[in-house]
Image 1 (cartoon, rainbow, N blue to C red):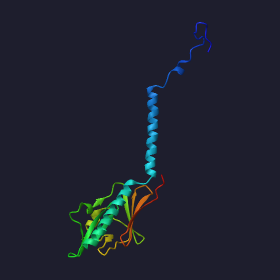
Image 2 (image 1 turned 30 degrees about the vertical axis):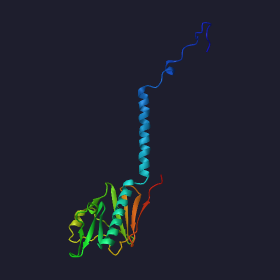
Image 3 (image 1 turned 120 degrees about the horizontal axis):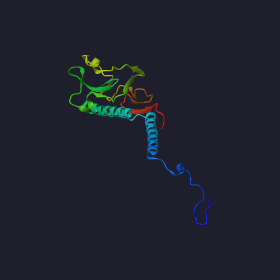
Image 4 (image 1 turned 60 degrees about the vertical axis):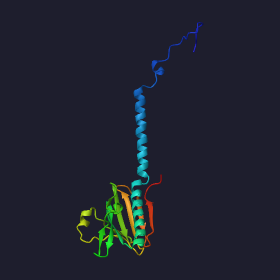
Length: 192
């Protein structure tokens, strides 16, 4: 840049637009756009990854069945598990009345509804069991018959219970064998 003897610049000043910075409004728009993009990425990671709620439901049921398996061996009680597409409840066999009765006074074994949008599907002997959608149909029966039995002999009805979210391919499978061994496995979720 040429200067005169007095040290003052002789060239024309820089255009006005080159001297100004970003306005506050422009910065806020950029920050908002970045926030929306980050939110979309976080949501897509949760959709693609495994479903924690489905896993929690499978693990809760695994823990309850393990507990009842031990109790049935120690106390000589036979327990039954009745499932619907949206929940489950436990029964105990009453040898005096010769029928399955709901477990009274135990909150852990009371009727449990799975979280919204979760669905249960049961398979026995490799065949899918059509589960009722609501308890009303089951409650009308005089003598309900649980699908899975936890017997005092140590045997458990072999089963595969899938816990999934509506609209998502992945699911968690709770598998029980004749000896009462339970495993939870994840299937169909994309790797993170």
